[in-house]
Length: 538
Image (cartoon, rainbow, N blue to C red; front, side):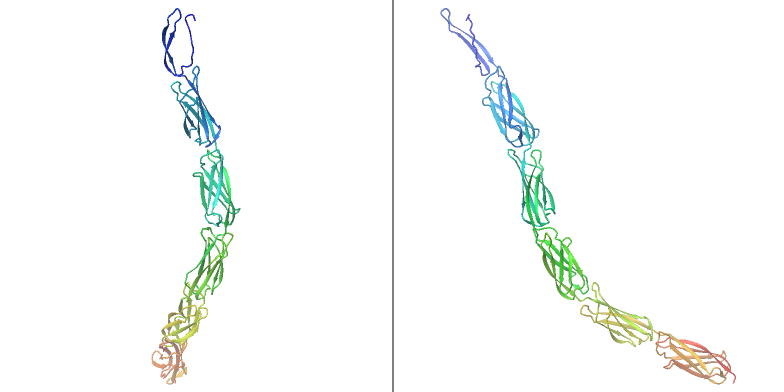
């Protein structure tokens, strides 16, 4: 029209350089002709919009990201190619790729496994006709709910037996993943409470305890404390604890013992596996040929002592009475008691004694430790040397005594032989007893006194033992009579009455000193005395 024509198209949908040819077809007056030009088509700009659903979601829930890529006017058409999605909260990052179809692509993931706010970036890579672009969004992920299931094994168990508590923590759909953190187990029967903590591994934790030591029904609660991605939850179960079986073992020490020795009887009460713990209560010891004793357990052990077990082998039974948590049981043993050894100690008193003195000889018969008790039977005493001999005495209160006053001066070996009895063995003791000479007193007298010159004067010496000595001194007495001018020496023999006599005339008048010296003998010491004798003129 007027030599010009224009046409429009949006069909240049690929970027590049186009050759444009315009061909005029001619008319009745003009011939046709051709003209050419070039047209450049650039890539159209795009915008990328990204969204997510559901938003918010819970940890592990499947989330769908959708990206829509649109040309920016005056560009038109349908972009092709791929979109890369990156979702991150700084801890967890998920990268996904989707292919556009009709300008749109969607991808899904359950990889958002940490709670928080995720920045979601969708990056369109562009194609031959459209430039790249990026879109952003946020996705909120909250903690997932959980359930906690708890089981116990074995159930029932014996008191003190090991019991394993297991807790399994599971996300509640649509949540997914593996909870972490700790589980607090509390088991109680109202008397005994046990608290344990376990750490989840793969969503499960198990703890073992031997602390269920009272029989009864326990409520077991497992409380999951939650973590950054999962909410806490609680589960409960019941567990039954029965009385545990026991064994009782009895021993005695020392074994064998000797008569009168203190013996300790020990009963150890132990749980029978798998039961554990410490039994309480009492144990009764029945000793054949001995007493019945009762003792209280402490730390699973009861002890009782006695020294009243007779000589021989005695069966011993220990019976545990049981308690709330443990069943009773019994154990047996035998205990042997042998005769106790003795020592015999011989003493004499007084020691030394003097001739003629009454001497008490004592044998003390005593058990040798650890033996004890009252010794019975007899002791035979044998005393050597002059005046000795053999005597037998009965032991009373552990002592046997004899007396003698016939021992002559000198050392005497004393032997005491204890004969033993049903509970004690015999023994022998020795001692040396010394008998010293007995002191004496000598008394001298003369008669007639006064006498006349030339008269015969009798001199008498009376020799007597000094108490506690006794007996009859023997030997001689020497009389010395002198007035300083005339001296007469006489000798007299001591008779059975202890008297020695001698006589002599004194020819000169004056006062004479009369000295009598007893020379002693084997058993008596010497002694002397003086007197005066007056001689007057005839």
